[in-house]
Image 1 (tube, rainbow, N blue to C red):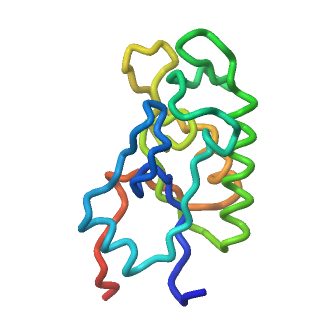
Image 2 (cartoon, rainbow, N blue to C red):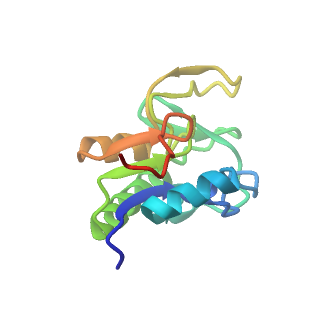
Image 3 (cartoon, helix red, strand yellow):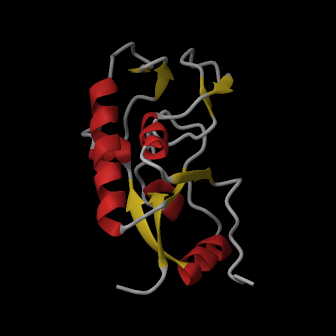
Length: 151
């Protein structure tokens, strides 16, 4: 293992096609290069790891539950994926996480309200909430500092 700080990262931000639509949310190449220079990247996709297919019906959080657009309760898959993400973080020694904003799993600080109307509300996705409870610092892709100079 390298001496770099381990960073848990939403796999979709690294270009993995695990987004609900089957695509990804890849960060710009220069951002990925800066991350790789400074961190040992530890990818996770809680939704896929929790057993949901790719592509999949979009889901949003409604209080403690997660429901997809068809009205199916998928909370257990989200909880399972969150537990796997936590195990991955602990095994890799991650104390930091860079997660996809607004996601019902990975969103930190603001997520969609469960109405599928693109309305944002204060809150965390299932995985972000669990990681924070366990003491990890969780950041979204627009709030993370990507510079490679540590001075």
